Length: 227
Ligand code: DX5
Ligand code: ZN
Image 1 (cartoon, rainbow, N blue to C red):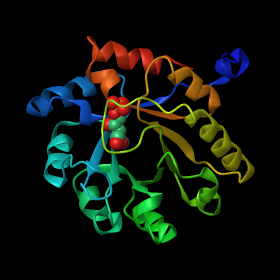
Image 2: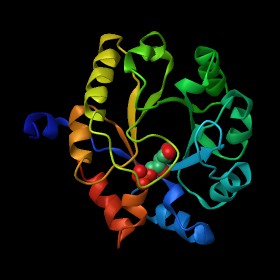
Image 3: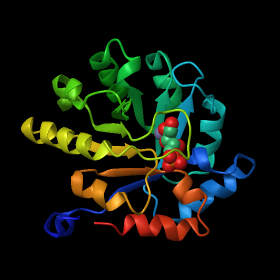
Image 4: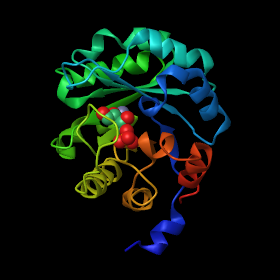
């Protein structure tokens, strides 16, 4: 049951539709649709077939998206050794870059490198990764991307344990007086979005729910109207 007091006090979410669910044969058309919509960011999923069991696309496609986009690109690196590609993605338009906690041996250093590129620095965590592991770096993280599905594919079912993780992470952020924002990625829709906002989320990624809907611009507006 939604706590109405918290609900009324919420800010509206940052909406980041995931281009992974777009029609790749009509990428320009779909990016222009996002330009026209109330989307705040464009979420760009990079998968290497090693860190995750799927390959999406790489730098040239990111550049092609950036050529048409009027919104900041939120690049989610689901790759091994992400530190090798930070400046390349920044050069192809990334405004935000998230790396996976599970893929970084030197997370603190990697976060500083992202910031030195003038990008927002994000850390993505898989469903099995406990948010407490971020306590020592929380003041260095601009946003945490809590994966609410196992990364690798769009269109998966939202994992309900995510609400608990959002609340725990929010407590860590508050206790450390950090400005870190919380992004949710995977299976987000109009039913779970208000509950995620109530739990403490700031940024909602949505792929299938936006692109498979009859009216994506209206779907984005409906998500934006939460809070
Ligand atoms: C999953 C990706 C997500 C995905 C979300 O590995 O990181 O960003 O595109 O898609 P939906 O909203 O369809 O779950
Ligand atoms: Zn993603």
